[in-house]
Length: 357
Image 1 (cartoon, helix red, strand yellow):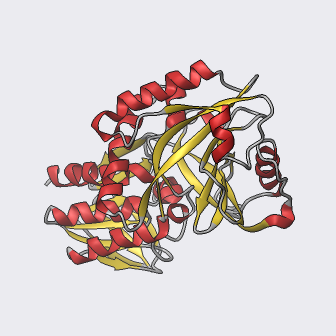
Image 2 (tube, rainbow, N blue to C red; image 1 turned 180 degrees about the horizontal axis):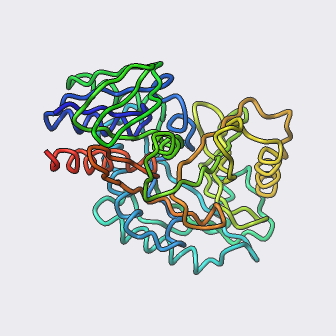
Image 3 (cartoon, rainbow, N blue to C red; image 1 turned 120 degrees about the vertical axis):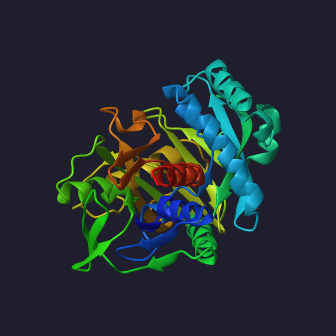
C-alpha cells in the first residue's frame, strides 16, 4: 500500500514510522523542513497534563502518562525526568486541598507508569532548596514528577527511525490540493496514492478547505509563547498565574530559564511570534513568584508555536487537547493532539489506514 503523509511535524513523523513498521510504502511531504513549526516550539515537556484534569480529560491524561514513560524509557539520551515544584500560597488561585486532590488523581491515573508519588514540602524545607522563591504567605509546595525533552532533536530521532524502515521524506515541497480518491497536487504535479494522511497541524483544516472538502471538525489556532532568561532556575516550577489562574512553567532548559506558555487565538496570516503583551504577561507573573525581578533586558530568547486544537470552548485555556482521526474515502485527517501522545496517535492512524485495505 502506498501512503503519503502530508506534514513533517511530530504527528506526521510518528504516523509515517508506524505505517512503515506495518508494511506500508510511505512518503512524507513537508512544505518547509521537518520539525520546523509547532513541534519544535513546545514547552519541552513530556507530561500527562495535570491541568487537564480540571476539564475532566481523564482519558487524555491516562494516555499521556503512559506515553510520557515510553519516551523516557526509549530515548533517555534526549529526555529526562522532571520533578516539579508547585508552590501553594495563602489566597492563591487554587486551595491546597484542590491541588492535593488533582495530584492524587494524577498518581492514580499514572498507575505503574508513575515516576514518583507526589509529596508535600513544608515551607521550612522549601527554603533550603528554593532560595529564589518568595516566601511571604507561602504555605509550602507539592512536588510531583513529569518528563522533559529536546523536542527538535527528539523529532529528528523519530524521523531517523522512520527512514530506517524505508520512509522517504521530501522537504520544501508544498501540497496545494488533495482528493478523496488519494490524488494530490504537489509542486504543481499530480500524484496518486492509495491513502493520504493529513497531519498538517495548524494547516490541516486549510488544506481540506482549499481542496473543496468539508471536514467534520474545525480548529482553534492557539499561540503559545515562551521567553528565555540567562541561567537555570533552582527548581522546575509549575505555577498558577495570579492574574487569571492559568498554569505556566518556569523550567531549566539547556542552561537557561524557560518561561511559558500563553494561550492566544490567532490566524494563519499573522506572524507566529510572541507579542509584547504576552512577553509582559509572562514577566509580570514570573516576578510575582521570585525575589529577583526580571525585565525585558533579561530576555535572551523568545519563541512561539501555533497549537491546532479542536474547537470546544470560547476561552482558549479551556479548549480540550484531545485529537480526532477522521476518515473520508482514502483521506485520513488528523486534528489536534499533543506532543506526548504523538506515537500513540501514530499507531491508531496506522491501524485505521491499514484496516481499510
